[in-house]
Image 1 (cartoon, rainbow, N blue to C red):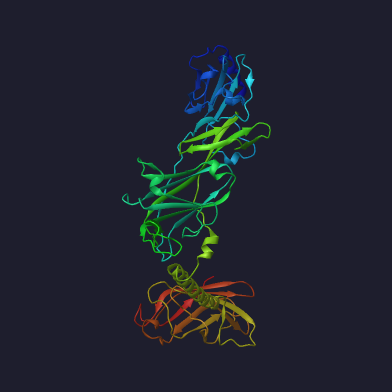
Image 2 (cartoon, helix red, strand yellow):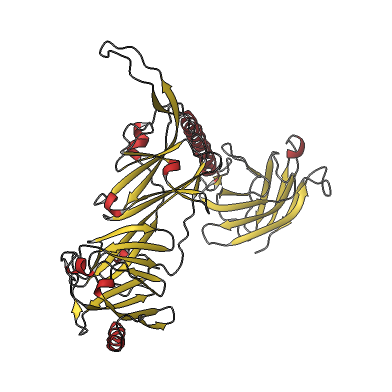
Length: 510
């Protein structure tokens, strides 16, 4: 594609006439190009718009690195070839992650009267390029409500600068439009405390660029200001007092000095405001190293839709744009971690941790109770000398007040033998609760054979609603041969419920 565009420009420039408007080819939104010949004496300050990108040229003598009068008594024709691509032409190479995904790529080259390329490196004056983005990036401001503190003069924000030679934009807008005249913005390329002590720079908010359409004040630090600094930038918002300093007599002065004004700062700064930051960069593609770099380029201006770049050489150019989150400066956090200044935070942590540990203790107690419910309970009246085992599974119904605390006993009859009266009990855990399933181990002297019926009853000794029992069923499993027998009831064993009986004889079924 690059070869096709280059050939098209070569054909167009052959037919170009000096002084005429550049010839253009627009291939929709994807690629736009323009070529033309100009008198070199008229090159300085000329601007050409191509597909939303704008090119502004320096003087011809500065491009060649010659004195300003290099064209005296000379007529020189110079050709320009300009291309704007919707996206990144070189989607590879080192540093590609710095390039904004929606940044256009702009290309600019110069040729002489014979259409031969003019190499441009280290021009004495910069080429200015307005590089658009295909979609306006949303910069959503954050509403900040500073925490009131007895020692707080600044509301701090940290910004991570990811690479050298980038530009930083800070936007501030007081929530109350009547405020802001006595506000200051301080910043530092290192950690800054909240009392202006370590601020590298300080500016009054009303001295910043004001955008009347949005109400935001803008601080713009171009890439020359940021330079090669990377890491954390700290910004602080505060309010100042303008007070009159009354002069005092001093033995070092014959006459007292004149009245002067001193500036001090409000503590307890708590006025809400909107705050946002973003980082922008100008990048070119180095064809020799196959990498995107910012060498020789400076960010002159930037907003959410366009970046203005100034570069002293020519190649393919793109822009980076990154809306930065507010990071946490842990060195500041730990340096200002006093209990009195952070009473609310510490109390919240203490209460939260206290509730957490109380929850742990409660959960542990419940876990122990759950462990007690696991496994089968040997019947208390098992004979230690009996070794033929049955598993009894007893299920209590779901209807209200189904459970019982009455003493439940049973007698089981098989073809070969029968049990004595046996009791369902467990001293360590509650049994026969509503909706519960309880497991027991019953030992007998010898096999009972196929089970014929079960007689089961209780003594109605439970108090109140715990006297009655809704008995659903019992499953009896022979551990030795795996046979199972079921005794199904699904009725009350209660004096005040059902038929008033507390005893049942249930036939067995396989």
